Structures are given as C-alpha cells and as structure tokens.
Amino acid sequence: MTLVAAGTSALAPNYHPLPVTLVEGLGSWVTDDEGRRYLDLLSGYSALNFGHRHPVLTAAAHAQIDRLTLTSRAFDHELLLPFAERLAALVGPLVAGPPMVLPMNTGAEAVETAIKAARKWGYDVKGVPADRATIIVVDGNFHGRTTTIVSFSTDPDARRGFGPYTPGFRVVPYGSVDAVRDAMDETTVAVLVEPVQGEQGVVIPPDDYLPGLRALCSTHDVLLVADEIQSGLGRTGTTLASELWGVKPDLVTLGKALGGGVLPVSAVVGRADVLGVLTAGTHGSTFGGNPLACAVGLAVVGLLETGELQARATTLGLHWGTRLDALVDEGLLASSRRVGLWAGLDVTPPVTGRQLCERLLARGVLAKDTHGSTIRLAPPLTISVEDLDLATDHLTAALR
Image (cartoon, rainbow, N blue to C red; front, side):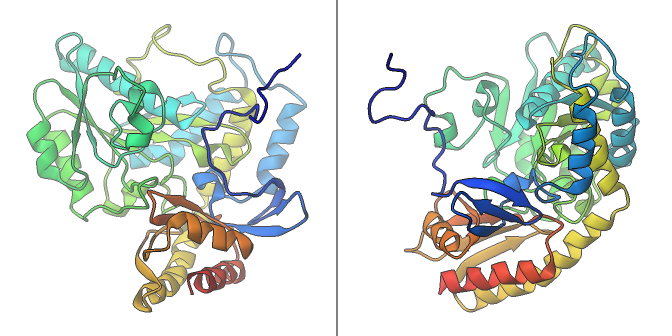
C-alpha cells in the first residue's frame, strides 16, 4: 500500500529548515547526524534559555517520569499547587495586583487563554455589552498561529488563506500610545502587546511606550496584557522584559523557556480578579499543568529565583553588544538591536538573512532569519563568554 505520493515527503512542508539534522545537544552545543558540532544561537526561539539538557531540568524530568506524568485536570496532583505558588512568587510581584496562575501547554494557548479571560472579565466585571468586547493589538505582532491569533496578524504569510477571521481586534501601529488611545472606546477590554517584538526582529519600543500604555489602561479600566513568551524568564536580563520600563501588566503570558526545552509548558500569570472569572467548565486543558510539566516548571523557576541568570544575561549582553555595534560601525551590518542576551541584526543587501544563516551554518553556528533581511540571535543564558566570542568571530567572518 502506498502511503506517500512519489517524490513527496510524509512531513507537511510548513517549515523551511536549514539543511542540518541534529541528533544531540548539551549546553550551548549541538551535534548533527554526521558528527559535526554547532554553537546554537537560536535556543529554540528562547525555549532553551538554559541550554540543551540542563542537568537540573533533565534530573527533574527523569525523576517525575518514573512516578506520574499525567492525571488530567479531572484530578489534582501533588505538584500543581506548588508550581502555581512558586511561579506566582517569582512573577507575581511584577504584575498589577495579587497574582493567580493558569497553566497551559503552548504559548499560543496562553495567549488564547488571556484573550478569553480578558473578554469574560469585560462582560462580567466591566459591563461591556455581550459579544461586543474589543482588544487592541499592534502591527508586527506575533502571538502564535491559531485561527484567532492570525486574524489580527499583519504578516501576510501567517494570515493569508486562513479566513474568515475572528472579529474583535483593532490593530494599531507599534510604539504609539496615541494610536492606542484613539482606538479605545467603551468596548475595549484589553491591550495585547509584546514588550519587545521577537519574531519581528527584536524590535524595542520607545522608552515611554510601555509606561504610556500602563497609564492609559489604568485610566480607562482596560487590561494591559504583556506577551512575554519569548522575552520573559531571563532573556532580556530581567525576569520579565516589562521590568525594563518599570511596568506591571495586568496579565502576562509565559511559555517557551518555562518548559526548559524539555516539553511545552505555558501559563498566564496575573490579577486574580481577572483570571478568577474562568470558573469550572469555562476553560481547560487535558495536559495543562500535568505532573511532568509542573516538575520541569518548578525546576525552571528554581533556576531563576536567585537572579543569577538574569544578571548573567545583562553582563554578557553588554559585552556582546560592543562587538555587534562594531560590526555596524564597520558597515558589515546595516543595523543591530539588542536587549539582554537577545539581538536582531539587519544585513546589508544584496545579502539576505537566509544567506547569512547558511554561511553561519557552514561555520558551525546556528541562527534563524526573519522577514528577509534580518536574523535573530538568542544564545543560551548559560553560554560561556568564550563561546559567545567564538560565535561572534564566525559571524564577523561570515559577513566579510
């Protein structure tokens, strides 16, 4: 029996990966199926903030696999409340109001959960007329790829061909508080924003943007929802990127690094009076908050509680930024943006981001292009300064 048409793959072509097949990873290094080693400067889009196979995380996973992996939320397990309490203790002081945690699996699920919570809060608490709630979002956003989320994407590749689109969203320019103010009315329940736009190429807003949104939302009784799925949990040198501007969102979506690169773990953390509107039967997930996820999530929180990794991202980022700025000064890069240990580099035409990533691959460095002329770099927070310098040496040589 023929299972796959001749000349085609059994795998759907929704990705265009670089031509390398990875079989092993440890720390900042991975190995391909031919035994060649590479420095990983993508870190699974920040899912691997702690590197590959961090011993604390793998030990937690191994221990839990031998005990209990899934109960569904039909029953409690011994790690669910401790996970929620520890995550609330880590992130709670960084949000507006007493915190509550709602665990999910993927980042997109966390965003969908935040959208549902904001709408229901709007109806039950704010008094928005039924089915009229609107959420303000910004252009260049990336919050996932579900049908609802791509409905307010401004990326043609992510959006085209997936209509009809979910209503209830108003798209305004990123970085403009005035545009958000103009879009607000009595139906507005939330403003959803990435403090730093990762997929767009590590785009950093003006310094008055997040504080301006916080003040505007507070004035009009609108929820400020920060998508920290890529930017959160140490990447920017702080536990949340929102901290860089002294802003406390009402809800924060977390994912990627929360699972330590071991399995998908996500959560919404924020005001208890908002998440509390999601009562039994109104929202759920079979795997959300499962024992294995909680074991790994607890270990991740433990790595971040001391603040050492956040401080390391700041220190290494400053060192790295000096070298990246020198590449711009030399004319090898058109521009660069960096926050913590996270950078977006714009290449000079006619070279494309994909071509630069292919050159880096040939030199033993893994990176990913985005939007044609940009590459994103997100080394593990555990990378050594020697390996970071080695990768930057290869970047310099590839540009030349």
